Length: 81
Image (cartoon, rainbow, N blue to C red; front, top):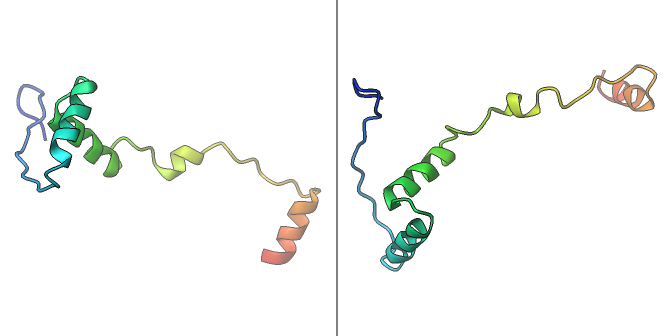
């Protein structure tokens, strides 16, 4: 969802994590020059598959059709056709 100025609307999220993890996560984010919120948002986007190409687009064009003269084609045809 975007605002009228093209910016993405943000929502506040409360999460509960191990108390020992918070300072380590903050240091990790700081070492990378990002906020902890940004780090979590990027991770959630990756897990939700927002930046992940689809299965079909990852594999499109990577396979060549079998040739009828190929022994593997004959073996697969006997087995599955």
